[in-house]
Length: 88
Image (tube, rainbow, N blue to C red):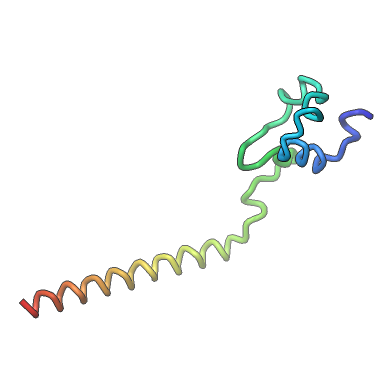
């Protein structure tokens, strides 16, 4: 079987599962021609990036919620500080 005939997801599985006997059969140029990252084994080659799979609206909502949470925390801390000063 030719390396180009092996489905990319199967190659990913072989690498992720650390199947050394199968990995040893991959040609040396395979490792030179493909990016292997700890966080993404064999990322897509078709020009896609992680940003293509992220809903920017959800990211924006998360940032807003995080900012609101941080502001609420700041207000609570300020209220506690003022209460402590009044009690002294």
